[in-house]
Image (cartoon, rainbow, N blue to C red; front, side, top):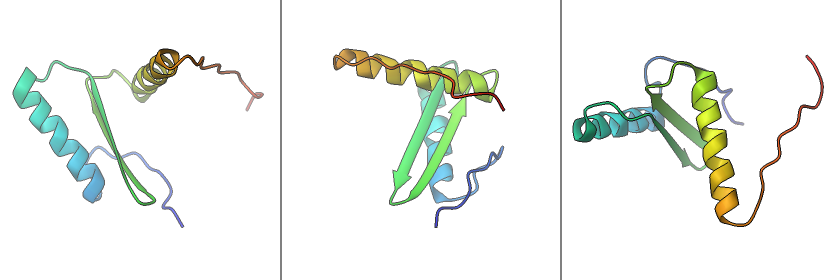
Length: 86
C-alpha cells in the first residue's frame, strides 16, 4: 500500500533526497534563478522537489501548463473541468 502523500520542507526519503540533490546541482549551473520541478518514481514510490515558486499552487499550475504543452505537441488537448464544490 502506498504511503499517503505529505508535504515537507526537508527531504524525507531516498527519492525526495535525490530530487533535492538534483536541484542543488541545477543551482550550481545557473545560480539558482530557474524555476524547477523534479519528479522521480521508483516502483510505487514517488519523490518530488521544486524551487523558486511562490506557492504549491504556482508549482502545480506550472506542471499542468507543461503537461498541456506536451499533449499539444502530440496533437492532443488537455481539458480541465470542475466536478463540483467541496
